Length: 155
Image (tube, rainbow, N blue to C red):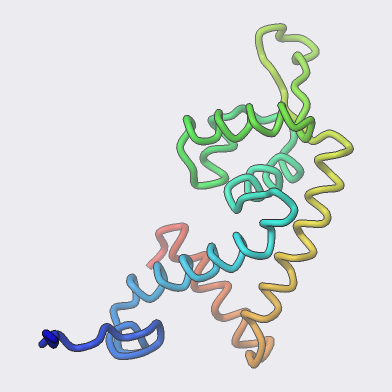
């Protein structure tokens, strides 16, 4: 029997994967954990986290192009094109010609898409509530403000 001389890798939250780790790594690790939790929470609905984001952005900003959706969803335009095509096939998204610009196609959720998004949002809200457990309102606001500043590039 050969024993490995390597030390065991730390679990999330331990060692350099914990409070002593680099802040950028901790953000990435937290995002990956949230992504995995969303995958599991939405799996039986047949919705992936990227699809959830695109549905959410379409509901919030109807009528925008795939390129706009890609910027909002933090995905590539190619990925959004594939997602939108699949959402159309599933009758979750409808494409309608622009009223005055015939070549422009506007996207919006179908009634079926709105229903699925509502179910998905309930599950994601539960995940987010668990994520924020134990934080005061002030702590949550501080974290939200800091994350928004970082996203906006405001140091």
